[in-house]
Image (cartoon, rainbow, N blue to C red; front, side, top):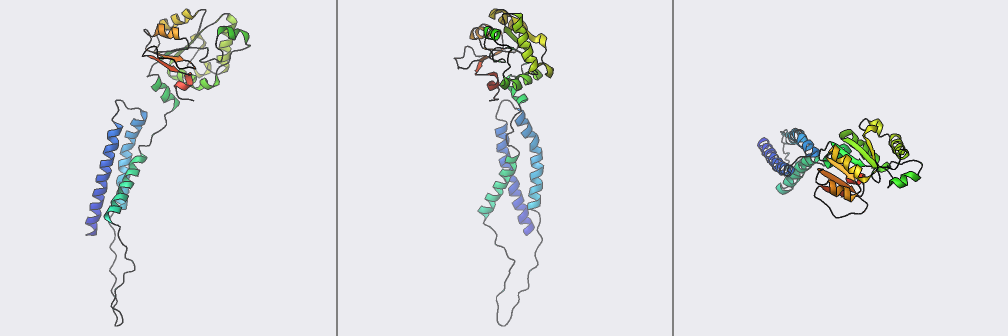
Length: 275
């Protein structure tokens, strides 16, 4: 009789587990696309089922019967005592405890996993493989060709370096800027080299392009036909909106979106959630 009761309890526990797992899976596949966290959760599902099955078997296995104690009767006492007897909890308490255990086991395998920077870059860039980006106010601290002329050397923004290096690993990146003289070009190349941008293997000096006008930068972008262009000049972004799939407007002040394919962010690193 005890064995049949244990089997019934095990069957009820498995049913609760299946019902709760069904809800989890329906929520997981309610999106149109699955990201890496969802795929990982599905992969862990098989492990969860095996783990839970073993857990339920170990907790609900057949129990040994305790031999009945002989009731000792004497002339002075007719009361039978069972010191090892244990009172069973009510059905409601047992059911609630089992539901909680099942929920905890399933929840453990559906905990959200923080994505890596590489995963964020690929997701944000929508798997785009070619990117063009201006230098001033995005990669460099300097904001104009005139400012670059009066400083002894150009400075790469430290906060953007990690994102920049990750983009070079995944994308064909071209950097471009308007300069006033050859000395400014050398300052920029030296700053990028000192920051280690060229040592990652994804960016070479030949992919750093210079021009003398803003129109020249726009022409570079048109010729390269990137998936993404990153700029601070709203006029250039507006002109290129018809030709480039996606664009990012880097500006400290949020402006009205000029086109559906033009995004906005205070900085490149903030666009990827690094700040």
